[in-house]
Amino acid sequence: MRHVIAIDQGTTGSTVLILDETLRLVGRGYREFAQHYPQPGWVEHEPEEIWASVQDALGQALTQAAVPAGSIAAIGITNQRETTVVWDRKTGKAVHRAIVWQDRRTADTCAKLKAAGHEANVRARTGLTLDPYFSGTKIAWLLRNDAAVATAAHHGELAFGTIDSYLLWRLTGGAVHATDVTNASRTLLFDLHTRAWSDELCALIGVEPKLLPTVVPSAGTCGTTRGVPGLPDGIAIAGLAGDQQSALFGQACFEPGLAKCTYGTGAFILMNTGERPVMSHRGLLTTVAWQIPGEFTYALEGSAFIAGAAVQWLRDGLGFFSSAKEVEALAASVPDSGGVVVVPAFTGLGAPHWRPDARGLITGLTRGTTRAHLARATLEGIALQNVDILRAMEADSMRHLTTLRVDGGAAANDLLMQFQSDVLGVEISRPELVETTALGAAFLAGLGAGVWQDKGAIARTWREERRFKPSADRAAVDAHLARWAAAVAKA
Picture 1 (cartoon, rainbow, N blue to C red):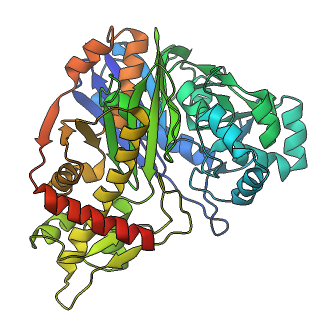
Picture 2 (cartoon, rainbow, N blue to C red):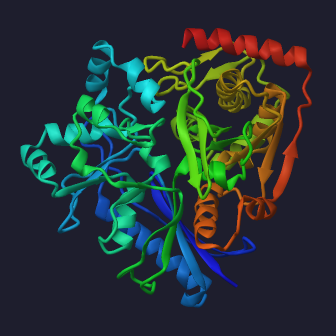
């Protein structure tokens, strides 16, 4: 029996899964690491702490699995996207803490580029909007604010990478500096049409091209282990993908029009759009979904900044309950939200609105409103944000959504999933293994190493746990959507 290791390096911690070729989970490890907030709006990670967390999680998983080292066919990596690391090619030491995807320090840079009229060209080339979210302006900030770093970069002494690239470097003992196409497509520096780094975009944003990694497919051996504690040298690293693209692959959304939603801190929706990039006219992002042997696939993406974080707000900010899992029972204790609408725009509104100035809003309060009504309305607000995104996706792609596959922590909430099905008017499919981000990395690595021969073999291993079907009266749903639209306009 062959095994695949999946490294899922996330924003707050690192998870490692070891699966056999039937998808039986034989080992799991997890380790959190510190978040650093040096100034308001700044978010940083210490790269060495990330690497230590991966090693710890890997050690836990290997101890639990107790499988022969010779049975490990491949390693796959999936990662928090856009987070930016620059390190010395000789020593491997980072020149600065990693600048995290959530970091907003380059907002002024993006605003100046927009004011100078560059956004339309950048969007046409990259599929992205000019926003501090993406890696390009983070790299430029590092170069602009440290003359020694800029000089070293110009002389080719430094390397940039998103977290996949940094981990690949560490796992291979510094032998490989590469990233995959999905992560490259999140930098503002990668041309979707030429499928290569753009010197023009590098010059516009202020990035030294010598920093950039080689771009490789998402599946296929790009390096082998060297000097990794607990692992023999020579294991193929055969899968790389950003976390949301990895979840799309892990959900076996292999046909154009299939879509998934990952309910984490925020809600991240991707739709497979096939072999040609679909440029959005409705506030969505165009991104690479994956590159595997014989296939290059694109996706549309829309993100709501707040999903599970809204439940955390009810728990920590308002003290409604002590565990996030309690929200479902509280919300289910009333038949509806009593006319209350919660717009969870605590950090602005993401796609398709892109209103960073928007703030959270509660409307429809009466003397009869209880904690239960607010809890239910908060769950509904999470689902209603997704309606806006998915309707924009349908219009941009000219495809009608029939089923939405779901994963992430909040996907375990049956009340939320049923409401999501009702307001979308489509079926919701929840898989047996909800850690589909890591599963996607395992699939890509297994595909790249020959554990699975093709997508068909992978699709046959994917199993559904439950399906939710629309059950609400459509007139009532339309009225609810109208209340939501009115509330969003006020947020």
